[in-house]
Image (cartoon, rainbow, N blue to C red):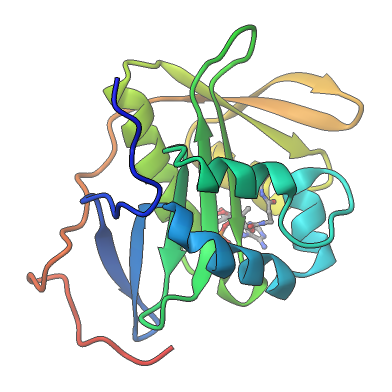
Length: 191
Ligand SMILES: CC(C)(COP(=O)(O)OP(=O)(O)OC[C@H]1O[C@@H](n2cnc3c(N)ncnc32)[C@H](O)[C@@H]1OP(=O)(O)O)[C@@H](O)C(=O)NCCC(=O)NCCS
């Protein structure tokens, strides 16, 4: 098995224009570390708490370690100025662990369809490895995330200490948006 070069940009980008901003969704690479650290400094403590279920200051070390090691489990959404505004994680099943997904969209970009975009991408990835279900751990108070995954057919499988484990069926998702100036593309705008 070959190890991906930490700075290799994977050829899997798709784009979408949201609020006149041409956004790119692609696999994360090691070179994204500074942008991902900056994303964590811009996110509110509330958003960070909902993502990590604990107070965190900045990007968790383990996350940065995974990026530097070239793990392919992460997706980033970036602006034309290469600012990272959202992060998706897909952890395939490992020993004793269910396959999991987790999302974080920067506060200023929430409720614009980015979480949906990331979720579709992760579910397509899960389908490629023939998974039928992926799981997301969501705090019981996190109504937006509960509603978000409900839209994807997510159902509560269990509760543990106020956290719901949602089982989300892996169904066929829309085909990826193309990373070229096709009919869907609008002129890129500044961030
Ligand atoms: C949960 C989260 C990822 C959703 O991302 P998003 O980009 O805001 O979501 P979208 O714009 O794609 O919204 C998809 C749907 O989710 C639901 N939703 C999202 N935000 C919502 C809100 N504030 N209130 C109610 N429903 C909400 C809605 O059903 C929405 O569809 P609609 O806009 O057509 O009504 C984002 O709010 C976030 O990063 N939260 C902090 C971290 C977190 O909670 N992670 C989840 C645990 S892994």
